[in-house]
Image 1 (cartoon, helix red, strand yellow):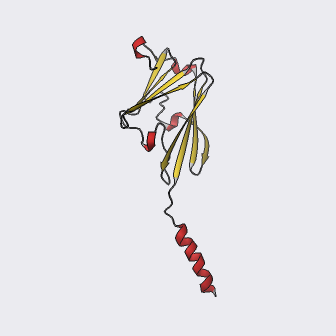
Image 2: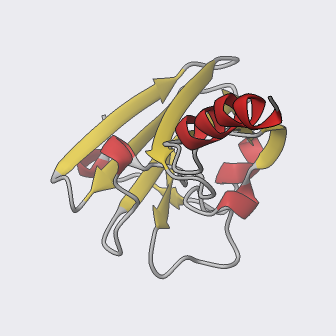
Length: 153
């Protein structure tokens, strides 16, 4: 009788297996606490495209990235499950000044938006993480002035 009870248990273990597909999700929230609209232009070299995102004063933007992996979570700006490439860059502008974030080499003295260390981790679950970055006027104190022909919009 004990052998008969063991068979259903073995069948359950056989079909539950260790080879599960996981979708890990990272949510990156960008909050604008400046008095100007923030424009984010993210260039993906590998995908050959630019994405332009605008956050109004007091507004918020969420970017959600997913990757099928048991352990790894997608880094910021992982478009179409494609992690950033060495020639990728992000231009952040407040309409008067701009910051350029390069994926490689990252500038250690800036809050590089490609680096997870730049963000505050606000929520962590088994297959989900939420990060936050808050833009303030201090982000643009040492930024480059925008020349009229360089406007990212």
